Length: 95
Image (tube, rainbow, N blue to C red; front, side, top):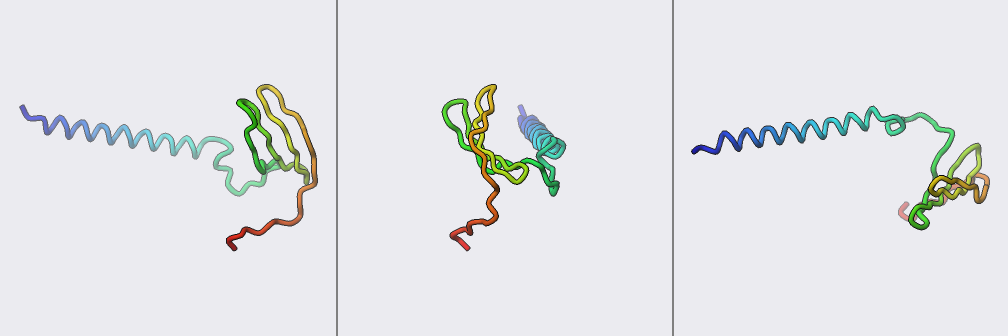
């Protein structure tokens, strides 16, 4: 009983299925709205986010030259604080 043709066919089919999976994931990422927006400027920008508890999150969002600190939980969003966008940036330690 010669198993070599069976294993070659199995390896070929496995490579084909893996190639289709990787190709479909790549295509989904390219087609999915919001991910590949490129150089388009947005009105809202997420600056930072941090989980608090099991379902809550604090987020800093820039909108209309303001930074908004919001609390997001299941079914609820609350504005906690508002501040102007800083006009300076803190340089990195590396350079």
